[in-house]
Length: 262
Ligand SMILES: Cc1cc2nc3c(=O)[nH]c(=O)nc-3n(C[C@H](O)[C@H](O)[C@H](O)COP(=O)(O)O)c2cc1C
Ligand code: SF4
Image 1: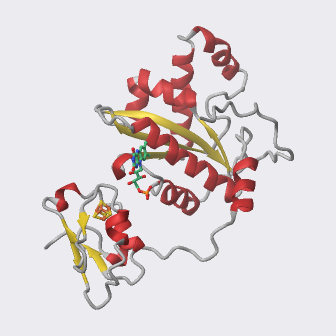
Image 2 (image 1 turned 120 degrees about the horizontal axis):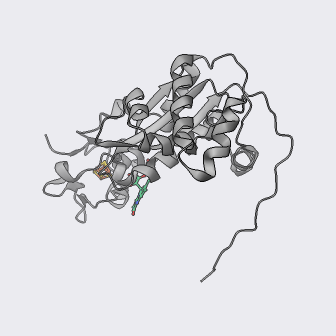
Image 3 (image 1 turned 90 degrees about the vertical axis):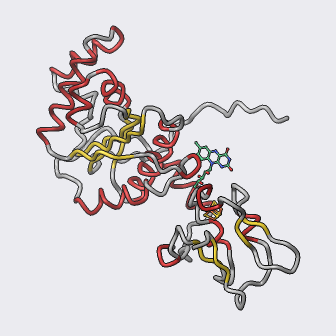
């Protein structure tokens, strides 16, 4: 089966599919129907843009069944709403004891998996820890590693006095990991975690980046093992999650942007 099939009765020859393909797999001669170039099937990155931009539904892609595409919601937020969400997001470091319902965590992952990835490689995998005993062990192992790093020793000691710098009392930990050999693992994970953090904020959940636990994961084999991260993969970033105890009433100032306009 060819990569793309065009319904000649629906195609309006606008060429939008050819323009949209990021890897130039679709050509369109004047007056002819769009067609895929040689080896298109092996070169296709399955981004779905060819199907998504066709206004008449004339194009189907044999690697991506059309029924798997979702309609774009009509109630997309405008710039003001998006800006309000982005600016009011804060790192939350105080959580209630009740766990986040499983469906809400699943919703977060569903959004995060749709974040952009380099060449649509979708190489990010997830560990979601909710088991209190496992979270406690993550904290212990991370704290153990912190005692070996001069600038972190003070915080590791604070843990013994109940100051949880590692998980901040979060009732869930989402860890993103990717193949060690994959160049964009950290970038893709950071974007996906940012999607997750913003979605959490929109859902009234609290989230905070877990840099310490991510660093520890790369240094403490038992921690990576506890999370089930395979050997040829690396921990790329984490979020502590929970029902927030805090509510931030103001948006703190940040440095002016340093920009060169050329
Ligand atoms: C780290 C990263 C690097 C990317 N680099 C490029 C790039 O150099 N050129 C480009 O056209 N798209 C680039 N993309 C966009 C991806 O190809 C795109 O996100 C992916 O195909 C999924 O499509 P979507 O963003 O429409 O969901 C990049 C994306 C990421 C996350
Ligand atoms: S799915 Fe993306 S890469 Fe594949 S043919 Fe369509 S536009 Fe091109």
